Amino acid sequence: MNRQELVQLIRERKSYLCIGLDTDIHKIPKHLLSHPDPIFAFNKAIIDATKDICVAYKINTAFYECLGIRGWESLQRTVEYIPKEIFTIADAKRGDIGNTSTYYAKTFYETYGFDSVTVAPYMGRDSVEPFLGFSEKWAIVLGLTSNEGSRDVQQLQLDGGFVYEKVMKTTASWGTPDNMMFVVGATKADVVADIRRLLPDHFFLVPGVGAQGGSLKEISEKGMNKEIGLLVNASRAVIYAGNDEKFAEDARAVALQYQAEMAGYIPA
Amino acid sequence: MNRQELVQLIRERKSYLCIGLDTDIHKIPKHLLSHPDPIFAFNKAIIDATKDICVAYKINTAFYECLGIRGWESLQRTVEYIPKEIFTIADAKRGDIGNTSTYYAKTFYETYGFDSVTVAPYMGRDSVEPFLGFSEKWAIVLGLTSNEGSRDVQQLQLDGGFVYEKVMKTTASWGTPDNMMFVVGATKADVVADIRRLLPDHFFLVPGVGAQGGSLKEISEKGMNKEIGLLVNASRAVIYAGNDEKFAEDARAVALQYQAEMAGYIPA
Image (cartoon, rainbow over all chains, first blue to last red; front, side, top):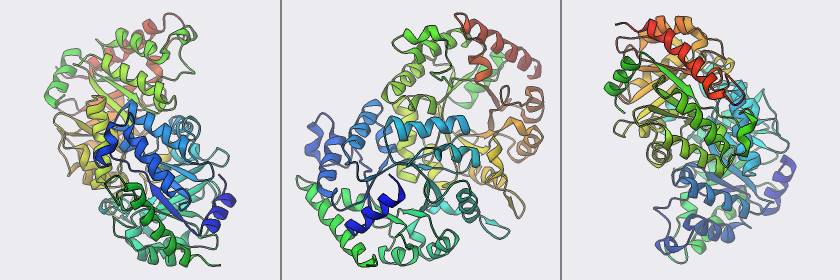
């Protein structure tokens, strides 16, 4: 999916909601466990209930990988089930030396058909660039994450700024706003305005709204650009809104609340 | 595997060779392609030919992941085939927020049974610690990598040192030399002595010897500690030593050269 299509989808749906399918076999409603593929059964119900409200689904691969091969089967079924007009994110946080990063890019873009994959920047340019050479595919580079540990590396002080600022500015120079986004944690809403000044044109994928405590209002005010430029992710707050037979309805209700709030922040 | 067992294995075999099973479907001998699982067939032959010479096998997951589910099947067969007395490394470079990192740890330690997994430190403490709470399992944290891109983040200058020095020193404080190692790139042999002073007790996993150009002699002189403290990885130089029916013999011959050289560096 290219940027024009994504922006158009956001405007049509008045939504920049990304739903995180962090589907944990230990947290899904018990009645699904008798299904041959409980993870997919859960995801299918969530997708059916929310596919007209959100503009992206993000699959954190850890929840699938830990189940071994059947986890990857659930992941593959899920990606294939997501309607093609919705943006898909493999939240896999990969990154390795050049040749190997190319294989990771192929894994998520081609083998599974995602539109994008999250990329860890610690290994630098030759670990990020291989994710940029695919038409209408996106590297979503970790910039400033929403967890406490972001202090340990990302927020180290350099001469003239923090590590994450240098990382984002440098990384941005290897690609364009058409093939690169950044992860920008929402628990630091005050910082988002600074990052938006640093990178006026890129999309930001913002986790940490909802269960992790960030404010949708603040992040929208501080992070939006003229093409919206935001995908705000909610995972647990949406997918575990309920825990019984009507879990998908409950998820839809919460997703609708997010969408309604977002609609108010999108300029006409 | 615990540290005493690893050190004992190194002393018995007079080898600190780790063989990287970076098995690329496009590079293995053509006659294997008719096998139902060519990747595993290749690995099995390499393991049979080298399992008395090396002390560790490192599997870079990217080469397997890009093949989708059948790639994971090849990976699983390979890990299960490696003799239990040999140290196994999932070179997966994972790292995510706490809960999610726990799932990655379980993936590699429990689902596939590896002794260790490589971890990317960009997300900080709560992304690394979940890999440390498993008995006789190891997080191998990216410190200074051997690629050019290591300049872009790792070698940024902080007040009082480089980012990679700060990362390694801080990260080391979250674990012990019994549950944590570091990746230290061998193309920077001059730097290895400094890192050894910084971290006298930890094992270093050293890629970049052989195809990437590092010197085994230099790295051994500068990196060894009183318990050896080194696992030196060779991937392409060993596994692609030959490309015909006798590829496994050719791999053995190269591995033996490494082992013979290493034997000369290990103090009696």
